[in-house]
Image (cartoon, rainbow, N blue to C red; front, side):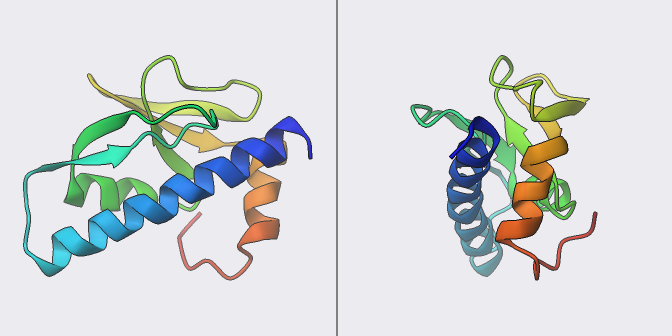
Length: 111
């Protein structure tokens, strides 16, 4: 398994956890900031990012967009598309993007 594949699989684990947090916030009408997991490709990262749930939902509607802490971006597999005070929004590129397509061909997110 190469770097891009490992990173993509790790990011997908965090995305699944974060989507459950988002769903819970919707069910319970939580509107404040919630601690979402950093969606970087580092297997050792366990840090969280405080983001309002509706903002997170808007980011991840785009299939290849992920939230990471500043400094956790990886230029080999992603590019920064938004810079916020406490986090970055990155878009997967190249092999990492292809890995997402292979792992989740039926995902209903927009590109």
